[in-house]
Amino acid sequence: MRHGITKIVDRMERALTAVSAALMAILSIIVCWQVFARYVLQKSPIWVEEFSVTAIMWVGLLGAASAVWTGDHMRLKFVTNLLPRKFGIVLEIFIDAAIGCFAAFLFKQGLVLTEAMWTSQMSTIPLPIGLTYLVLPISAGFMILFAFFRIIDKILSSAKSSGEVQGDDHAY
Image (cartoon, rainbow, N blue to C red; front, side, top):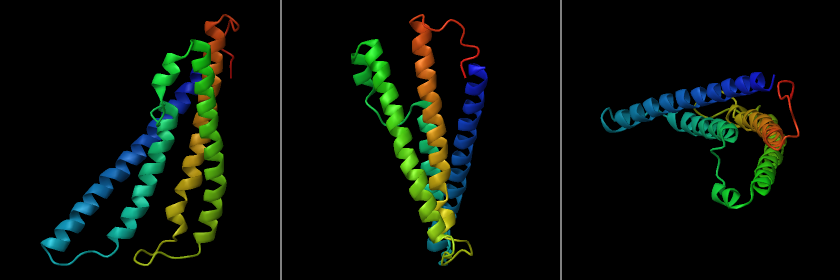
C-alpha cells in the first residue's frame, strides 16, 4: 500500500509541475506578444502586467510545492551527508517538519489574504484580486501533504533498513 500512495503523490507532483510548466509557457508567449506589441505595433496591451504578476505567483508557488516532494527545495544536503546516517535522517525529518509548519502558516494566512481580497477587482482584468492569492493556500496544502508523506517515508525506510519493520506493504 505504501508504494500505491507514493505513486499517487508522484502523480500529484507531476500534475503540479505540468500546470506550472503550462503557465510558464503561456506567460512566455504573452510577455513576448506584449514586447512585440509595444515596440513594433506601438500599442501595448494593458492587461499583461496584472496577468504576469498573477501567473508568476502561481508558477513559483506551485513549483515550490512540487519541490517539497522531490526534495529539490533549498537545503544543505551536504550537512546531512556528513552526519552519521541516523542523525542525517533525523535532520531530514526535522527539515520536512519545518517545511510543513511553514506551509501551515502559509495556508492559514493565505486563506485570510484570499478572503480579504476576493471582493476587490483587478484594474485591467475583470477578475478578483483574490485569484492572485488563491495559490497561497493551494500550494501550502500540497506542501503540507508532501512534507507529511516525506516524513512518513523517511521513518518507514529508516525502520525497515534497521530491521524494525518487516512488512512495509501495509505501512500507510
